[in-house]
Image 1 (cartoon, helix red, strand yellow):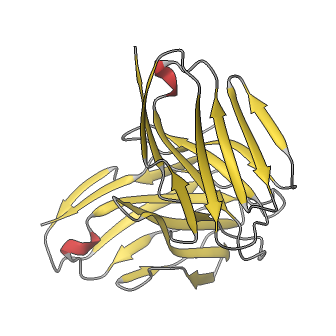
Image 2 (cartoon, rainbow over the protein chains, first blue to last red):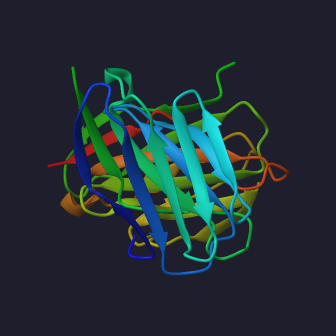
Image 3 (cartoon, rainbow over the protein chains, first blue to last red):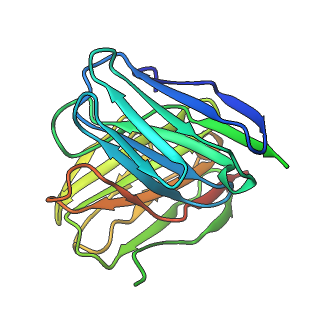
Length: 112
Length: 113
């Protein structure tokens, strides 16, 4: 979706390194959702952010929402091969409360 | 807990044939969605449904038909498949009270030859 831009499109990191994925919206964000997808599988819900400045963590993954910049970042600390996959951000940009628009995804590879 | 299941998982069909992708969820979620995922386009919404007998078009509805006679089922039909409909199709659902957290099925890989 051009309304949601993810960067980078792909990323290769050495195991143990930290990394950040960004999701920027051209419209007001009413909620930002992060999903992970492994090749050949469905999307797994990671985290939801709704308020400006909100930050959530799950294991070694932290997501933040910058409402003013209409941007969210996903940070992985000490990456592991199990973190490899496609990370997608989805956002409610209509405030209708019933659907998500998705970014193009970031493909992450972690080299052991 | 079966959650949301799609069938078939893999399908090869010929141009012009009718194909139906099935989606079934066991959560009694009111909302259901069909997305397609293509390289370079990410996930795009085809159709969604807010409840039984209520459906609405998404971003890319042309060439697709949906129905929702029962809350738990949301089939997607390609009436006359075209090569451009080769894609991975994801069904998803959400409860009306859970904000916008959407839960996805495993996907259906469709190839139109």
